[in-house]
Image (cartoon, rainbow, N blue to C red; front, side, top):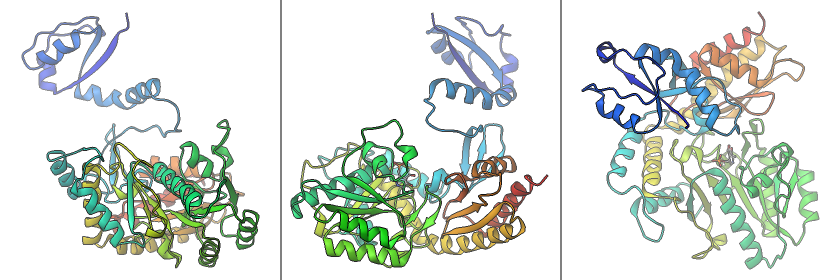
Length: 464
Ligand SMILES: Cc1ncc(COP(=O)(O)O)c(C=O)c1O
């Protein structure tokens, strides 16, 4: 018979008054007025029961939580060995109580940081009002969020889903229907960039121009081809090659996962021109860069162009899952039944996204992203200058910034991230040689200074 293992956290005063237990012990029945009901519940299933004081729990919970996690969760992520337990603002704490400055923010997702009062209020109010209803019906928060997005972008209409991949999947389907119905194309092609990242569903992983993500998933989805990013000559050649078949060009305004690589204005101007000439759609993936992170509300504003379609997720809900696919009325070709999502745009997620966007505006967080981003890049550049053997350059927009390591250095981005964790700063790699900084947009000047001091320590550790 399988035995379940339960660990109960209890206050020391209760622990002291408990009947001493021999542990682990099968089928334990303990009668104690304070914890009677929990114990009774546990003893109804085959169980090994351990009762531990809070101090014992703290001492074992991190490795225990990690071991349990690894036993039951698929190994799709290379995780760092800390178990995060709570957060507040730009800080998080792990299960041993160690504090970290969080410059990962759920990978560019926690726009307002952790436990922000506006999110707490929105979550609390909406869960008590109407948290979910089918898209068979109307509910105000979805309409209000769509209105905010339309009034603050170049788009006319919104479709809501739950993630970046799903938003991009929607954009891909929209482009195909547009090509079939408006351009008379039978076998549409979508061009995406090398080193891009668009998600992990079959279509979006195909759109992702990184062979390492395609490995072992063949056959991939037909109708995609890849071009080098920021290369006008290659772009023109590909557009010519697919003359009569081009449905869309899909690009990130700044490649996040692919190395924090900003788009070039002249390149994007030419992309726009070629889309206008061929009637192909320009799809901009704003999943990582959008919602103020770039120092503008949308990344495309840094490039002086307007897309026909753009997608958002990550920062839109500040950590509550929501995605959006936005389009101009000229390509709003979806009809009832064409596309759907059970959870897409439910009242709960939309109310939180409205709280995030409202707070972003009220607290001038886009200006903060610009100013703090400048401070961060200036500080990182100074560290680069002090460690030229390891650090090559700094690049980025607003609060999506990359520290580029020297190709010749034996240090990889993952090593810097591990050293950062040791020193109390969470960072995320963007490829092998770029360390990404994507803190909450609420980050303060003092927190940027503190992060810079830790980066210096983390790099200096490789000199020792
Ligand atoms: C630019 C971009 N597009 C799409 C995605 C996929 O988003 P999700 O993980 O929410 O599906 C990501 C995720 O990192 C991304 O950075």
